[in-house]
Length: 402
Image (cartoon, rainbow, N blue to C red; front, side, top):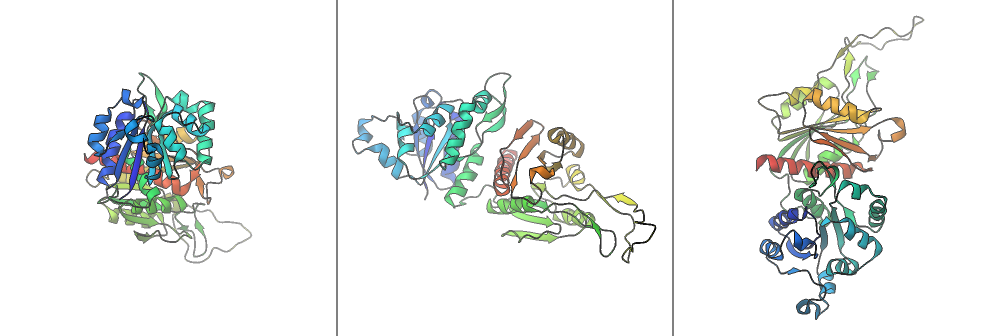
């Protein structure tokens, strides 16, 4: 059984920590809580104790616990320390190595992994001091989940600063502990498309694009690790099959469309494949030879729009339909237009211009575009993008079924 110490700081997001306790307990974790003085202005030690089934700690100079140097004991008896929400003040103290209360003393004394879930006003999150502190914490090996974009507690305020949802935090906790437990997508069926399609011109040539399939395959792997029953429909790629998924290999857009139709119904469909928009109207049976007249004209026709077709289905539509938008200019504006045009729920947009290095590379910088707004995620590995997206999907599907 994993032993998790949950630190709760003062902020309106502290109410989410109570649900986080319950989610961690559901997965078999033993949870102890440390509440800062400010946290107790938002939730009570009694509420945290009732949910955790453990005594709650809050005073560095508590005679009952400090007679045996309790803050050192708490630091050493934890497999993982989670701070949720983590305020700008606590992050500044962590970055500076301060230890003036129980929470910061434990964080300075621990050898365990530490995960923080920041929550603050967008202006505080983007402040240069906070950005420096975030960079220092990342350099120190502190794991960070969130914050997300959305409405703030203050009326009329919106932006990046909302604490990650409890299920998103749990997904990162499970990954850090290497124990999936009751995985958040267990019992869910997912479809992922990946890679390019190849549209033949003749037996030798074809129309394609530069997609490597790395992001789509990473999403399929992360979904399987989260417990989902995953069908991966992939165009031609030079990648190993992700473990724990059902593979469907295709070449053309029409073959991918058929494989997607056969995979239905699913709870969630993620269309990460870069499908060719057009195909040659009439494929030549023999190789086209070079002549003095030059290249013969190629008549093309439009391929089926897989994303739009699935998003507009009435009977078999997945609860969550997610598309990708690979752009070279006006990334967010084009993604918003695509979201409306295709009828899907989310669009994951990125800049794939040559200077970005995204096509074929191992890193990505994406924007999650929904009806509620745009979240711009920091540059990270494609594996980390996949895990973050799967955590968001788990949260959304949990909410849809509750």
